[in-house]
Length: 88
Image (cartoon, rainbow, N blue to C red):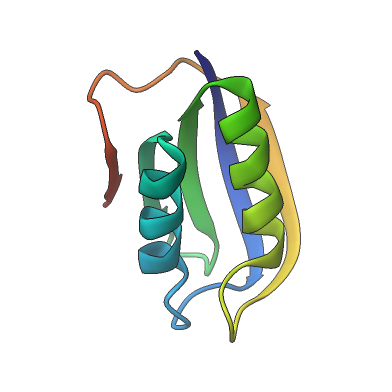
């Protein structure tokens, strides 16, 4: 299982980004979580089969309607201990 920690910048708060990400991640079978940060960024942990994680990253770069993703910083990390994908 591959896991990445993502920091997503742009217009990503107040546009339904977290809820959109939960639906997309569950559809792809990706585990992890997503949350808003106090600095206006969105942080997410995504883990799963490499193809599913890559598809999730491609989707995150586009985001939901109304979002404008400027950049995504990613780093390898340990997978989550809990199954499923959740909004924090």
